[in-house]
Length: 558
Image (cartoon, rainbow, N blue to C red; front, top):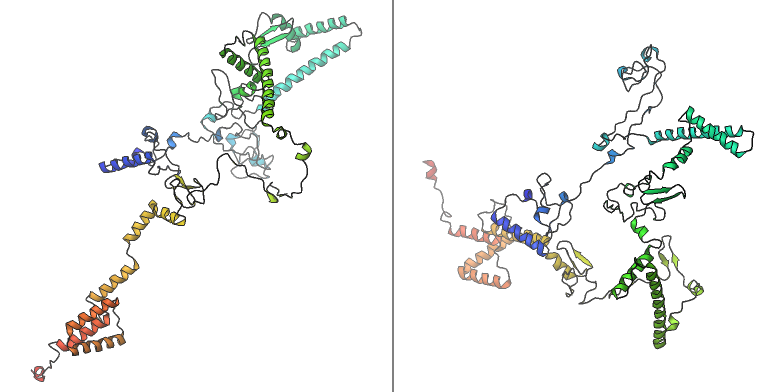
């Protein structure tokens, strides 16, 4: 359905014609409308959906305003930032005109120079000229301009870890040296010295202390201050977790692509894997469905299903109330099922036979060698030898009816959007095949062929033009010498002699009518130009009133 601007204000006849076209499209008798990209538009879409608003209207039928617009966010990437301190090649040897008077670089002026002001600049000394800086042109988007972490280098944070590890290593080395300096072998004395060193170290420098010892002191207050989601018992050292650790990456942060797996914030579940191209065994999180169908989870589901089905049949089985009973009954049920399966198999084989067909072929015969030669290409296709048999479906294939040589659905008519036969281009199911004549008829019945034929009929043919020119030549007022009519001298002489003979006989009208009848009987009744000219010449000489007129001499003397 076209948009409002494309249709405009229609007359009553045009509106009725548009409604008829919409009804034909909905009925399937007319082809569907195409959008700007050549895709058909469903005629059953309501107008309030297919009609574009005024600020998105393109003037043509389209559904592009209902699709998600393409958003190029390549400019918002964090790795697209300035390369600080980058220099453009080696420095110049001499000062260049227009460069910085302080350092000699061409990329900035003296008032913008970040180097220490020299007592005598490079303009006057031509010494220690700095290289030009590389000026980057980065087009940042709306989000990149307002991102305070844009351009931050995560490698800077590694310095904090290195400093912390250096402090820990120095502390450990100092403690080991204090213990090595003790001459006694008594462990109790060693512990006292180490403990005294700890206290002195804490009093002297609060920053110079071990985090392990602080964690040991914090165990006293662990029972009184339980963290959210876990309970710590200092005697048994058992931690019970009922929530994820804060250091774990949340499942909705593994893949930030909005087109990835759906995350339900209400139930905190993500059924599909957030990263598709990583195997489930190697992924950090493979989705809730992977854990739901791995391990003993399928067995628990089968046990729950068995309990529900047994309770529906009247048995007193409840998995949560008595799980041991449900598991025993399920185990007994599976044993009876296998036993009944074997009994049925034995009874069927005893009644109908065919046990020899159930025996497996030995592996030596399956993988054995044969005399059949088959040659394969690098891509795995058979070059020589026996081709592999094609897989056949349960439906009848290659069944041709009504003189067809192709099956129904082997051809698609783009103009009408219907399927048909490729042999005759017929779109009627179970119709009789007409072969090439059917293709020509189908091609002639298309709208394009009908328009072309009507245009050809409107244009005059070459034969019509020739006949019209002959009529104009015969019945126009053109005469010899006045137009472009050319006469044959031999035919003209023969026509003049025939006309003289006819007039000598005296049968003017009768002979002419008899000649006309003879011409009609012979198949040609056209009068040639030579005969017309002969008739004019003989008539002029015989019947011209001024033919015998002679001028007298006295007319000129007067």
